[in-house]
Image 1: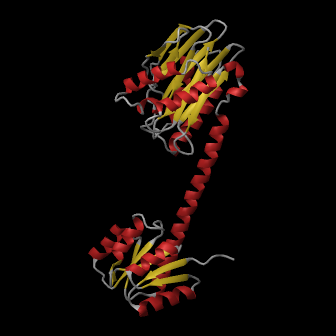
Image 2: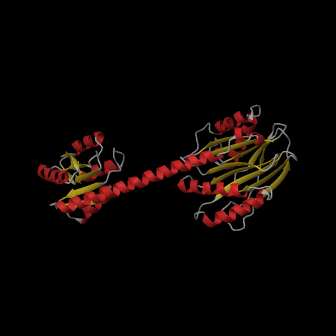
Length: 369
């Protein structure tokens, strides 16, 4: 059986309250009444209702204050509110809208007008709730899709990597991808879409598809990023951009190719146990038609480690500056030297978050040469 929409009626005039309640009940609505602010607050605390009609003038306060209370923290603050008053003054109406009301009914009220306004705002509220539920469902589906695309170390043992990934919201704007291009050749990508909302998650999903389509040993990482940039520039919203750090590791030749597109620098822990920051500056993806990325080629040795990360881990450092945060992370990389990679990466994330979890997506990838 369908639940009747319940309307809260607050009016100090018993006659007006009875008339309002009667006309609403005749049209299939449920009602619950109160004659004072105190009574109304008690009803709001214990009942769930779909709409409220509040008289402006009440014996122990006024409906405007009650409306403000409902909209600023009291239970059911999403419920549409109609103000009711014998005062037809424009200033009173404006005060009602400023308090959070969605409509205004003047006494003496007319049956058809009241019913039309009640139905209209209940329909609008239901439509709004449906949109929110649909968005939540789509966001949950997007989050599930993202989780399914996150690379799993156990499924790619030859890639020798570990990953810590924690989105700030249901779906994140950080991207982590690993591609096997040959027996000894792997690409490692960590990207960060600026912001942390649904829009960034959608851009990140598109980026995942672009890298999947374009990562190939036929092209070097810089060429792949140029191709990705051309496509991203065609759809990315104005003011949004992507930072990327892209590593290609050849374990047969012991060579590392590293490209940086406006991303925090990678950290390499060398065979002697010392960690170094690979300072590189390059243009971001999605902002320029012909960006210049920072490119480095270097020799590496078995047992060395490369760490890629999102900026959340360096902006939460106990030290003040971004550079100090990077140096703190490099120092922490040394502190996990003796751990195997699967234990070292989550521990490294913990060390950088000892002073509180950052309000952003967190991504950290450790790669064993």
